[in-house]
Length: 220
Ligand SMILES: NC(=O)C1=CN([C@@H]2O[C@H](COP(=O)(O)OP(=O)(O)OC[C@H]3O[C@@H](n4cnc5c(N)ncnc54)[C@H](OP(=O)(O)O)[C@@H]3O)[C@@H](O)[C@H]2O)C=CC1
Ligand SMILES: O=C(O)C1=N[C@H](C(=O)O)C[C@H](O)C1
Picture 1 (cartoon, protein in one colour):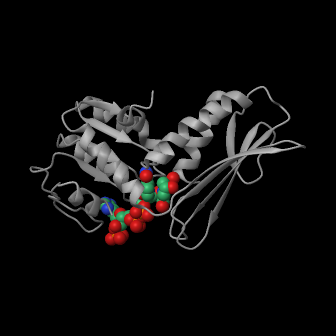
Picture 2 (tube, rainbow, N blue to C red; picture 1 turned 90 degrees about the vertical axis):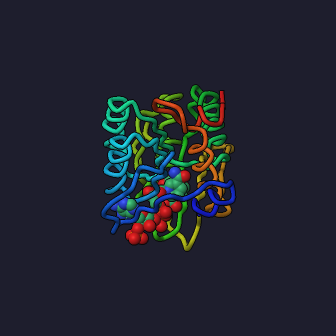
């Protein structure tokens, strides 16, 4: 999907890296995009930093090494963007989530919960997007952590479902005894993720530093 979107925007694919790739020719690359495996992402990023190639990372489930990746990027004067979700809609949804969380902060009668649904091939749970959403709530409310399924009071319960080929659905619910407020993002297919990653790749060429999709999309 990334290749398809990149070609449609007049880019050239100079290398494709898979689990079996032994030698990578970095010489012709303006930028690299990594959507691989939680166990492979950090190693792939490292190689890009060492070869001075800016890198866009969409792989989820490796973030225990994010700080190390940032340090390595800075050490090599590289350029790097990680996003748990590159779709433009989800990046707006991240902002909406934080805005709603701020408003709900002092309304103790509402309890928050989250649900994410993805295809059955997905390796990680909860999704990276759900973790970013939970962090957005924690930053703006008195919730202290998130937990899969049954969370104790003060923590955000996340329910992960794996159904068919679902590209990615995330919803956040604030419920009281008398009503509920729900916000939801539904990906209709995977093209939005690829398009956002290619837009980020176009944006980062020629820059140095560690950025986010908020910088790319100028979301204030
Ligand atoms: N941030 C975002 O917007 C999005 C993030 N994702 C994330 O991207 C990741 C990939 O998801 P998805 O595309 O569904 O997974 P897939 O399994 O379809 O694709 C993963 C690819 O990575 C390849 N791969 C495995 N090991 C390596 C390696 N060491 N180096 C390079 N490539 C390798 C696999 O090759 P092979 O098939 O040969 O094993 C496969 O082609 C997941 O972490 C997912 O959560 C997904 C969509 C959107
Ligand atoms: O694995 C996927 O498919 C997706 N992964 C990302 C995530 O973990 O949030 C982004 C998107 O939801 C699709």
